[in-house]
Amino acid sequence: MDTIASLFSFITTPVSWVIVQFHKVYGAIFGPDTGWAWGLSIVSLVILIRICLIPLFVKQIKATRAMQTLQPEMKKIQERYKNDKQRQSEEMMKLYKETGTNPLSSCLPILAQSPFFFALYHVLNGIATGDTIGVINESLLASARKAHIVGAPLAAKFTDGSSKVEALGASLTDVRVVTAVMIVLMSASQFYTQRQLMTKNVDTTVKTPFMQQQKMLMYVFPVMFAVFGINFPVGVLVYWLTTNVWTMGQQMYVIRNNPTPGSKAQAAYLERLTKHVTTHGKARRRSERTIIKAIVAKGRDRNEFERKFINGLNKAGLAAQADGSVIQSESQAAVQTEDGSTASAAAPRRQQPKRQSKSQRQSGAASAGAKATGDGQSSEPTSLSKSDEPEDAKPAASAKKQSGGGTRSKAQSGQRKGPQRPKSPSKK
Image (cartoon, rainbow, N blue to C red):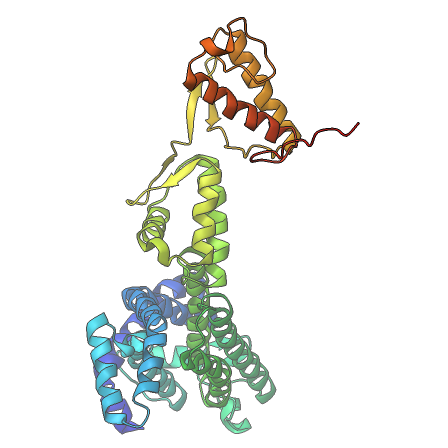
């Protein structure tokens, strides 16, 4: 234990100094020897650390999404080189290099937080054993040993015996009840955090081994927290429970406002964004314009939810632009009414003509021909019309044309086309 403490001595002193500074503030309000002063000091330490880790958290989100995007390509490489592990690793590294993806980026917040966790563990363990550590002197050590959180000493553990718990001024029942409740809350918050990530913020259109691994971790991590939690002091449980609650809230905010493409969270977000944009007629926030810009840039590669979002804007007479802004589309331009208000004039919708029957088409053609004749336009005489001119005075072309017209009129009246058979002389 002393060897591990010496390894983390470079971070133990800063952590103990931060706790002492927060203790001075809360001690002036609640009293220096109260559990509120020391407990809130630990919670404030967690919040400070997590605020400093926000840039790493953003990198973690980007790395996780990049890994999800690469899963189909990774699966192809695994199937193509399933008998050559070395070539498979080389192709994987090549894929990571081309896309600029680092698989370890998703673990950065956990790796960065681990030194603070071990440093706090050794600080609280020193309080439990009565050893000064970092900037915590003997007076602060005595004050911390008197602090109780809901009846449980700050340095007590679930596995401690009754004699050790009594030396800290508490009962074994109180310690075990408090630590058991905190362990359950810690495991439950970890499970819920992982579950909402898997059920809401994962692309459901891609089924890969990565998703199966994440689903397995959803059940493994809570069990690990429960097993290791019985050996943590109450102060460390406060630290870890606060960390899980912060992570859960931070992830809920990210899922709601910046969901993974293709996930259920994106469908819910785009539905809210459609209502917001159609109500105000524009994208008012910078984050909204960023997401609209990314959707427009995808073009035909948009998923189902993104296409539904674009169609919803079009139906409302709006159009998404390449820079993420939303303008009124040309099909529904605003027109000025007589009273001075603006109204949306939709473009006339093209309708297919109704299909007419044969008799309706023939009657329509006959009426059109009659109208043309009435307007003074030249029309060809039919074979039944009489002419004042003698037949031999008509030009040959006109006679030929009349003959053709007579044939067509006979064909339209139901007679057979072509030359007619001459009638046989009647027999008397």
